[in-house]
Length: 480
Image (tube, rainbow, N blue to C red):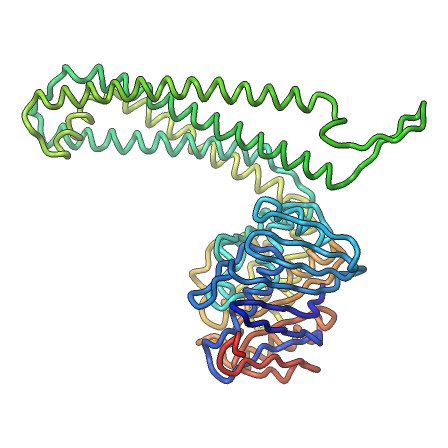
């Protein structure tokens, strides 16, 4: 992908920014004039959920981005969460963000692999706040995250969905029992510090009933949320099928039939079943909520019959009456913890064992690190790329290691997708990084990524890159 130009329309001001070269430098002589904001606008125009700034509310802007992919010219036009994509100035598609972000990005990056699509931004974009410390997992910008395991799974086509769902369920259950353990610990603390407190018993039955109904309520609400997600996915799938404008041909008659909601067999029956199930659960939830309200009112009335107590005393009395077997809870927590570790290892094994993507990433990272003089911190084991131990890395060393990781990601993604990715660097010159270190990274870009479009925002000029197209911002981004 190569960006041709970006147009920003905001409060009567229209600004066009041309990217005329493989190497583009967004330059200003001083900080805080809008260089980073321009980079944010660039990805915002490509459909990413990029937050605006204090000075400019992105949702009030119209942004247009024109770019070339390997074989086509594309242009996006975005206003708030509505974006249109024009291909070769002929075909046009509309998307509602963020719900249809994946569908949009599948056009941009030439893949439908969601694991890759979700992690491309974290590979190609290093922002000034977190980008130069984001090694293999974490927040890229706003609510956008990067995860190396997920990226590797996508690049190597390793499906761990079933294992991940099992682990998610185990972690949720573990969290519940850990909360119960906290209650047990607090109850034991109460017993030690107030052995002679005689809590009334007549409200315990009401409290138990409320607790049971609350569990029912939470379960019903979870089911409703799940069904709502199914309904939403069914609608999105049907809309997607219709946008594809597919046709099927009857081999006997030769007639062609369009594939849409009117011709797909049983789609309405399936939707009616889902709606019926949804309504039944909703009725049940309403009944439970009504019963809960009655019980809570009775409990409140019962509290008024006893001496006025502080809120903490009421809480202590309720905790003291909870009947939980502590030994059983500890056994369950141990079992769930072991299950979580087992599933985590299974996911990692399925991701890494006999995986050439992992080997290639490690080789590229080591090669780049060697060129930057920091290969001594690279562990020879290939699973080093999944490390979460960054305590030994700081300053220029961390800067160089992160750069090595990101360039390796880009190489592997390009191999799988068959596209050239843009490289976007925001303020490469950090506080602890001198110009010699920056020159080393720029030399790597010049030597190995000269065919990629590189966009840098900085107050420095990088003479190692040539030819360079300058986009200078003097006072503010959208000055007239």
